[in-house]
Length: 315
Ligand code: MG
Image (cartoon, rainbow, N blue to C red; front, side, top):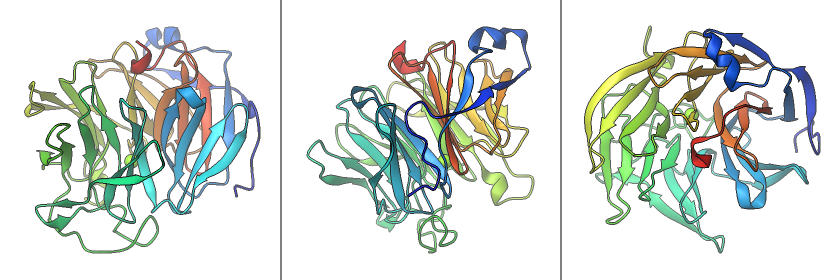
């Protein structure tokens, strides 16, 4: 169990610290809002996902092989252990949990009765690397990234060799359930987010962890109606640490984890500002009853901060 388990509203670290790259960032934040540390004691917190009907957040503590749960009413508890070194999660249109598992090198869905169903574990007959992060599109398509972080060592999974020879971005078709390659030209694809109309896919590349002067940026992929990539461009580069997890707000702005906390980008790629955190952040998601709470997994901790914007799902 985490040694630090505040219950209820959580420990306030005082007013959040913001950096305003652009004056208009001021309209997106609440200057007096406290930065709340909801949980600590994680080995590497990742993969936050909000369950509105349960009023709770689930997230991963990858090296500890467990998933944790937080709610205002109940505080912190263990949700699943072992978790097969689960990393990123999403929720589908039917409210089911979709998870990336490093340890089993697969993407799964937890059915309403608790049964765990495998959505993908191989590509062209070879094992996936270690699915990292996942989203579900409005049509039910499941999009996920497959870098090697979960097989590079025994820290976040089980050390093993890559089998298919790449680090792809994949899409599982909602009708045929077939796995298709979205992109094969990322060094280490990581967090991802999809626009409302499913025509713009943002994908983080954290290839700088493996390649000197490699990418630490976010790319924007333009999709056609069938989900095929028709164009790709650099969207933004993270200047402190690495980008990892991303989320869109109700105006299409992108919120991205970084070495210094969370960075916010306009749809045109301009950095608007940052929320500074005392630990390197790994992932973000919107939640709360009105969608204006930003949950951030960051190294050992889970943080929450109240914003003046809502997540895209609350549009
Ligand atoms: Mg990630």
